[in-house]
Amino acid sequence: MQNDGFDVIMAGGGAAGLSAGLMLARARRSVLVLDAGAPRNAPAAAVHGLFARDGVPPAELTAVGREEVRRYGGEVRAASVTDARRDGDDIVVTADGDELRARRLLIATGLVDDLPDIPGVREHWGHDVVHCPYCHGWEVRDTAIGVLALGPRAVHQAQLFRQWSDDVVLFTNGFPAPSADESEQLAARDIRVVEGAVTAVESTDGRVTGLRLADGSVVPRATIAIGPAALVRLPFAAGLGLATAEHPSGMGEHLPADPAGRTAVPGVWAAGNVTDPFAQVGAAAASAAFAAAQLNMELVQEDVERAVAERRAG
Image 1: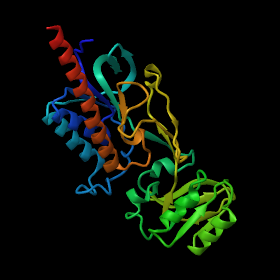
Image 2: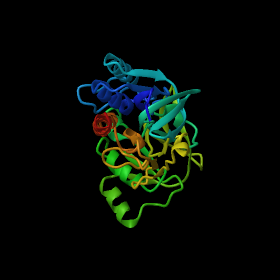
Image 3: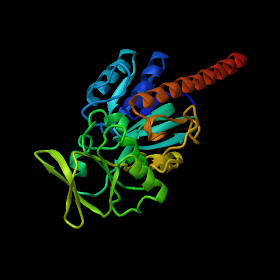
């Protein structure tokens, strides 16, 4: 079918979507990046661990990325993808009421952190309440850290954050107490264990001061580390016949894709956090650049086959 739309539409305008858009625009493809404007890292003050851009505010990084895509003729729009379907050889994407056609779709919608319904968590999320030591560990180094258990990975998280502080307390929060082996490991690293449900994050003047337990006591802490489940943002999955799955790590959901980024639906690709909840900004952008190169090669092969067929017919 003749396509009068775009070569590729990127659903998602964060690091992954913009990285793919940049690669494909530089490959002289007609590209459209649709940005819903709700990045996962919006609450954070800065992006860390990103080579040559460490400490850059997330909004500044994406603003530069949008201009880079546009520099090479790509288009970036503020819009949310609400539906998508295959129509012959094309993919039809509905974004805020507009129907758009593309030869390929690359999904880079990212994830949402499923924060616990504990007062104070959401208010301090991305600052004094954190989840990734590689993203925030340096900034909270040497503070009194409380690891609030939200699942079976809490012991691992406590051991990891111990690298950044010698004052780490694990709060079981109603989950099973560590096993005998885990208790020995925690004790060897001077990580105290506090049992009982946590009912609130306490704060003063906008800064976290501790965790309140169900018995009313408060354990002083300056930083709270949690490991919330990651949920896929994919309201248009059903229209494409896509299905999310539990990530093997137990961290939440992801959209399965092969190492190149191909999903189970022909013509639909994925990259970034939507496929890998562990990916920081640099890794998400890198995976999208790789997927874009593989996707472009698929289009090249399609163009060659069409040209050969036309030449023979002529």
